[in-house]
Length: 140
Ligand SMILES: [Zn+2]
Image (cartoon, rainbow, N blue to C red; front, side, top):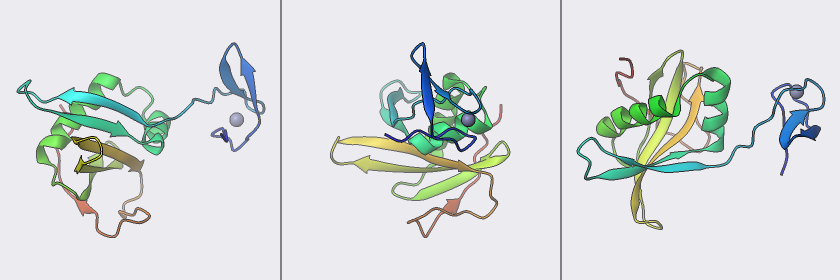
């Protein structure tokens, strides 16, 4: 596994079980795919919220104070208006959030995958040609 600090340094030291950058002493967090089952508001149906390592890292970089609870709430709003099998994006604070809502046949479940956050106005993802920008009211 390769470690990289936000400062660009790749040499880490371990301090009480935490990974610390040897250059700037920042804590470098481990990022892995994060998934959790989320109940819809009707309490009967559910989907799986998947956060890619990139998404987790960017959320932590841009909006460190965004809570898990806020994230789940945001996912509910997005899930309601998502088209299936299509990469979509919407404005989120000062950036854009990208996601895809689809059925995963391997796990037989609906997955709402938060792919990444970007501050760029032009929607762009590698390997995805057609990204649809939709309006979702994520405030309140
Ligand atoms: Zn560093």
